[in-house]
Length: 122
Image 1 (tube, rainbow, N blue to C red):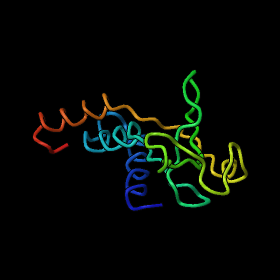
Image 2: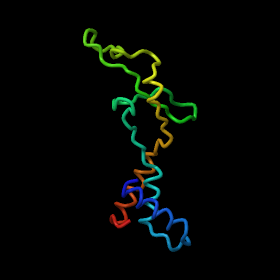
Image 3: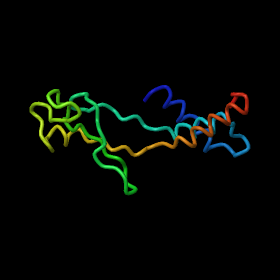
Image 4: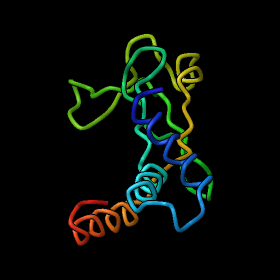
């Protein structure tokens, strides 16, 4: 858990434990910002490579995985499997990561505008 996570959890506890009139704008904005932030996609847990989207839409969480593809130097603009990799291999299966928190850039923009309008104190 990072310092930012600890600060967020403390702000959330204060926010939920206090009567509404005692909750500061700064605490409320901190919790809202964290709630609507996009969760970064981690690297592949097997090889450290970049994960790509494998399944998305339909109201479901987005699934990422290491698909083992790379640019084909012999055919520019085309992809090929890296040596030793295939369509749905063990590496692919072990690298699955499900992205539940997609964030909301509109809410984050509103928070930024509110802070600007209020002088940045909140």
